[in-house]
Amino acid sequence: MDDFSPKIFKAYDVRGIYPDDFNEEAAYQIGKAFIKFLSQKRELSTRKIILGRDSRLSSPDILEVLIQSVSSAGVDVINLELCSTPHFYWTVINEQADGGIYVTASHNPKEYNGLKICRSQARMVGLDEGLGEMKKMIEKGQMDEIAAMPGAIKTLDNLQKYVDSIREFFKKMPLKPLKIVADCANGAIGPEARAFFAKTPFEVEYLNERPDGNFPGHEANPLKEENLEPLRRIVVSSGADMGVSFDGDGDRVGFLDEKGQTVRADFMTALIAREILKHKPGRKIYYDLRESRIVPQIIKEAGGEPVIGPVGNTLIKKMLFDQKMAFGGELSCHYYFEETGYAESSLLAMLNLAAIISESGKPLSETIEPLKKYFHTGEVNFRVGDPDKKLVEAQKRFSDGQIKKIDGITVEYPNWWFNLRKSNTEPLVRLNLEADTKELLAEKKELLEKFITS
Image (cartoon, rainbow, N blue to C red; front, side, top):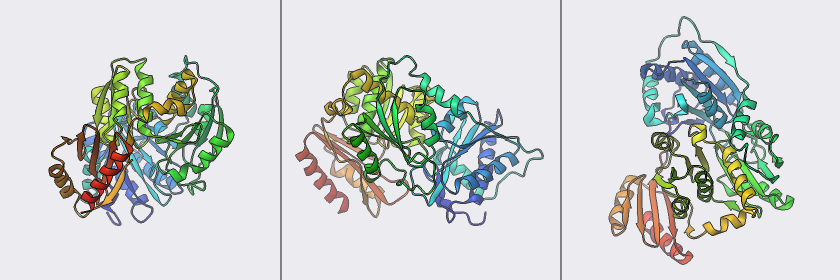
């Protein structure tokens, strides 16, 4: 293939700068490779593939190329056009499709684009689950010929059916008329959010609602504090009960309390887990290894079984699916629900939080306060020459602690712990550190920074 950049194949998806790294030609070849991959795995039973896109400027053209690529292989296409990834995943499951491709670069800046790919039941296709095989097919030119009979192409508008299905989970729950400020970040979820909130008791004020690939409001990434500033101001000035911030494709969601303070994603995991375990006692709950010790403590107190696991969409969903867990939360603001086939659902996460506030009758800040038992650095990145070597050195240097090798290296001591893992895409190591006191946190952070950078 001409003008093909192998570096667009990431650990969990396809992503690169448009059009230099990722473009229409790459999308066309990947579409054909995906169908061949499914055929080789004997997973083309319904011969239906779901396609959709986010609001990026290049996404409509890439989607159109994907439609032609997939249909030329003799497979039927169901086109959702503009939609969020949770909506896309839900449709793959609901339509019993063989899989799907969604055009997005998620929370990346506007010059990026890419693809999220899944098999039936919205099982993600990462580098080790098929993307690597597809990459080799393209590099070796092992594409199938165009089918004699192209597949049918149908545009599907199931937005109302989708949002109704999410609301159905809380049909009998006495939700109060909370005031919510929702920042849609000019991403794909704007139309869905309005359709969803229309039949709820909430009073909603929207920011950056209109999908716009220029992202005029701010970068569509709720993990960056600077992107939350406009939302923070409106939440405080309007007296809202909470703020909600979505990313570009609508699968990540960040939250602010009524004071405009960021609610950490691991605290959200603990809160939602506790809420879910009221109705599903004894069930397993996933949390990633970067999250606070308070998370497994809350899960146990609520009668659940905490299961620690690695970072990364494809790995997490596989764990949830294989072990039939009730819920999973990730520090990167992804929340996975059994009800949605373990696909992320930012709207369902928001509903759970609204239920928690409604039932407690307390401001969100008061609900969060008891969870602030420990002190956490958040994720800190360090550029190193050899990440693998640094992890080996860490295992030797901190051998007096309890060591776990789930994703990188986690070392636990009685009153502090840290995880050090390497990036999948850059020569970086990522540090997460937590301690019982602020003083101990500062001491151990200085220790680890010197070790990592030496």
